[in-house]
Image 1 (tube, one colour):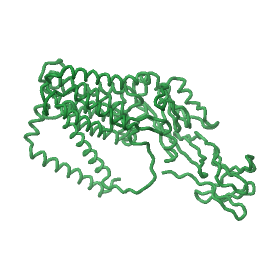
Image 2 (image 1 turned 180 degrees about the vertical axis):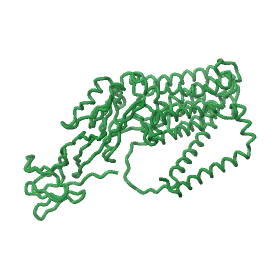
Image 3 (image 1 turned 30 degrees about the horizontal axis):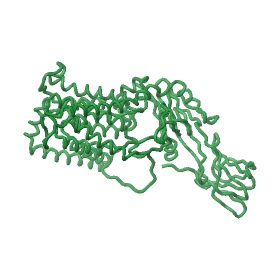
Image 4 (image 1 turned 90 degrees about the horizontal axis):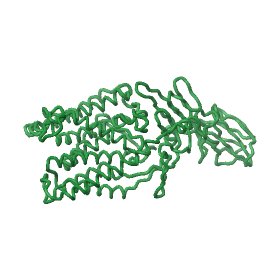
Length: 548
């Protein structure tokens, strides 16, 4: 329930923005309208709007965002393998959540109209009959977005998801035409995202507290972004060559550098497994400036500074630079082919159903064609699909957490990392397909005994609950009368084992309340703390895990 005050603040923010934009618009309406109507049918970027509408349809109706706006179904719509056409077809147009969706659509609304403006709804040269009419040229924009989305999905490494590859293609196309205007549009998209954040959370209260998460750059699909950008640049070069004019080298170089740096194309990283990553920042910066040089050499006319100059002279240089851009695109795309051909085979999926490290009562859950289980330090089948080692890094890495596999969909993924579950204590895994969705609830309970932890993981699916994993016992740091105390996960609850010189001398269930005795030691449970008493000595030996 939204409070009246919060609703009033949101309305106030929207009104302030609308009034400000309206005043600015009215100050030079004639200039804006004239510029837009010369390039757009009725002055509206219809191709951009139809593209945005198509992405929204996928999120709302295909992914179930209409029912679960903040938690859409995403797992089956990733580009898992060439053998899974559904993921390949929809991955570029699906999103993992509303912030992911809004970020990409805001960027599209900011950058795609600039690319569409360069393209124009009124043909100024001869071409295919399909694009000789305004309607054909309007429809060419969503058609291009569809083709680029499929290309990015086919040639991206890993199970990519999201419209950002197409967004970068729009940006690359716009950069070639209007380099500095593209940077300005990018800044405008940041302002719009801030406006969205202000409407969503008008007032934010925060304090220092524990947090969990991978490095921010580890969530960026750098390769997919670079592929989209190069595709857009090449399409822009083709249009510039056809029309015979282009921006100056300095503008194009500067615009490309500013765009690439602000969009973190320098964040070249490697996955080390179990939540570990390594960032090659220096290499990424060198690549960004190399990209800017190539783009400038491919398009810009030689001569003095000018917004646009006829492309006279330097043709051999430009052809050579275009060839290098094509080779760079091929080099970026080629590694995806063996990966996407061999993502998950039947033996891998069957192995997921019976993990080697599973406890005797840690059975996986089968949800139609999916298998969900918990495992620790198993080979990451997603990263290790092609065994490659170079520069001290390897694709053979381990994973720990909730693993989801499907032979039919050729997918294998760590849906919830063990470290994340240790931090949060619970998570929800969503599986499904076109027209259906089911959820598996994951719960962790455990005890800390100093440097060690004893814990259990349970799955809840529908009305059923089952034990998914039990860790090894955790031994307390302290010794009491030369005796060691260990907390042992059991099918129901936890147990305590007392040992001396590696020999068990007593067992007792860990008390829920009150006390218990074993081997002349008294154990008492006080809230989340477990104490042991021997004579006049009283020591805390374990503390129940708490989660954020």
